[in-house]
Length: 220
Image (cartoon, rainbow, N blue to C red; front, side, top):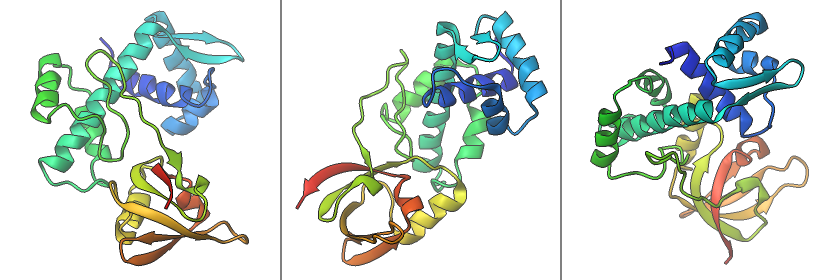
């Protein structure tokens, strides 16, 4: 059984590994907001438990056991986020920190009942896929809003930036999951995007547009 800190490290390595095969200790330290020396100590502990493989100067990879453990933590985190939004009326920018605490609950039966109670959701409030009890993710197809051309339309299905200020900004603009949008214009100078949302026009920066995920409908 892993400690809360060990589980947090495994989840962090798992998310970083989605972008690179070998995760560097400096990247882990930055993500965990801790010192590289502390990361090195934890890596040794996780390697001794057979949860990661580590080769000096090459980085860290999760073993099969480590990966399965990390996916289980991700599953619990995202299920709890759904529960907090759907059943307790939390906003999507309020749930992450609470779910960070709840994800460490060990009871398998509780999580299975929670999944059933929620109707076996496939995605969390931010559009991230929720793995099933066997660790399998539902297939999702989306592109970044920044990749759409003028005239393209689609549905907002997720975000790749989960910070509270970013989510509050999207909510203020009305850019929440399930909303239909169409690209009206893209500014050559700074890449900002003008989109049609229902009966209004919304302007967003290139930085915002690259973190909004769209299920594309193509051109109308």
